[in-house]
Length: 364
Image 1 (spheres, rainbow, N blue to C red):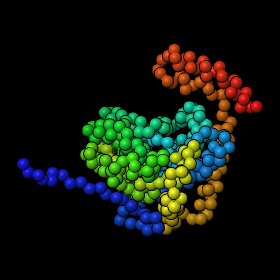
Image 2: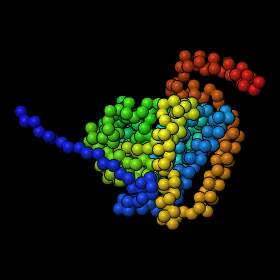
Image 3: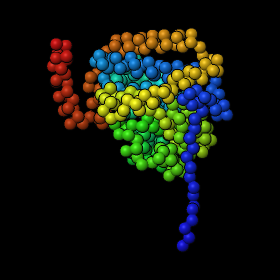
Image 4: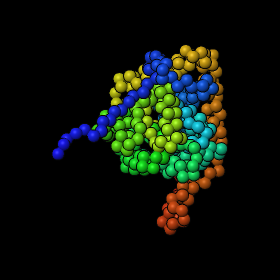
């Protein structure tokens, strides 16, 4: 019996703008000025909102939340590359993208204060609500994509998830279905090096996340996820393949979570300050700003004006959020099952019975 090689595989890495601001002009996606400025605006909005939310959480004015700091480029650049008919199926660390789609910061704060109504985003109809369970949103993305494919729409779905999600069954089932059906999906793994406190090397033996595409016979590429230009280019190319009926793509965005997993966690217990310092040198925001200045589309005066307007918008959102009231406290019980269930109703009654006592204790 012969022993012969029947296939050979490789994984490519894409970087357009390195951490020192050096541009590979041949790969520059040449993002139009208006889109570029809006992309940068979204990244700054995401970073500044994180800082404000951290203070609100420490003051007890919202609950725990997952900061996006350090990961602004993968989500914001992907959103900037998408078309108006595309769908976004995100996870929980994609504030920049959600802001670009028109979601309100006030609603975002409401969600993180524990109110289900924070998921209601009037006027935003192609963006699924935030998904917290790991990987559960990935099959949803494939389902939406298959529906569009069935209807003959020329559009695609972009879905985000973390590196830990690629070890979940939902990820593999979704990749398989999308590849078999050639559904128009762009899978974006934000490989931020840590699945909460588990390093990437301990949760998968794969040398790259991108190579997981090979098993499903779909294109896969590893991208510098802190390079907004590279992310824009990779997503745009994947979308064009999807629109052309060529099926899904997996993009591994190599990035880093510069803050904690959530505000309920202390990252100093599982990673070194030296590691974090190395990644701060690859911060995606000053890198993109330097590029914009080199293209003469951004100045220090514009930067100052942007920071002032972003902070004012965030403060207005905080006031709007804190003025909201009148929500139904037992609303989550309405959505456990499609129809009333005796056990759930019993739990609802117990919850409502103790609520006045809890409110009395909270107000002294």
